[in-house]
Structure formats: structure tokens, C-alpha cells
Image (tube, rainbow, N blue to C red; front, side, top):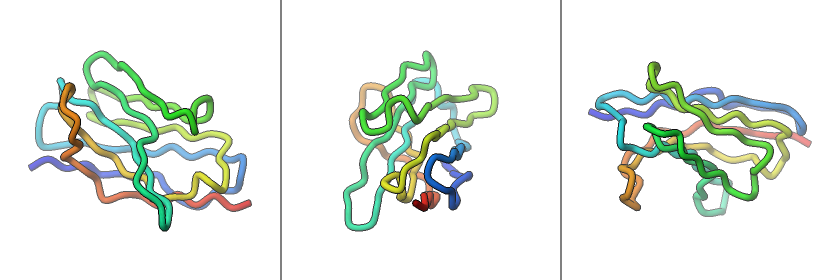
Length: 119
């Protein structure tokens, strides 16, 4: 049974930082892509960043480029999202997800972690 468990969300002032973690379990994730998504109230869920597990090929959305960094610890089966220079518009529920490389559908999802940035 595959599980993705996020942690690290919370309340932070604008300009602050948070690091989200996503611990993956239940299978080997080589050949997979791990992604971070976010969903603000009343808005669609958007991808923030993604990393291919094996070769660390990375994608970062333009909206967070230069502020957010995605990484992974292969030995710990954990993906991270380092978020710096946070803005109130970064407020959202952040989700970790996984898909097979080469497949478009994200079919493993975590439960989400709330990030709130106050102005």
C-alpha cells in the first residue's frame, strides 16, 4: 500500500521560510516522479514543482521559481519543498503526489498540509 505523508506546513509571516517533507512508503520509487501541488480556496490545484526520483530532473513553476526548491533524499524516500521569501499568495494546502515517469496521471496523493502566510 503506497502512502505519501506530508509534514512541515504552518503559519509564517511574509518573507519567511518553511520546508515541507513528503515521506513515501509502500513501494520502490525509482522510475517515479514526485511532485508538489497546491490548492488555494476557490482555486484549482496547480503543480508547484516536480523531481524525477532517479536522476533528479527538476521542474519548478514560474510562479515560485527562485523562491522554492525541490529536492529528494533517496535513502530516506523523502521529497522536500524548501519555500523561501513566502508571500500571502502562497497560502494554500500543499499536496505531495507521485506518478510514473512518462505517464501523465498523478495517482498517488498525500493528505495535504496547510501553509498560511500572513502579511
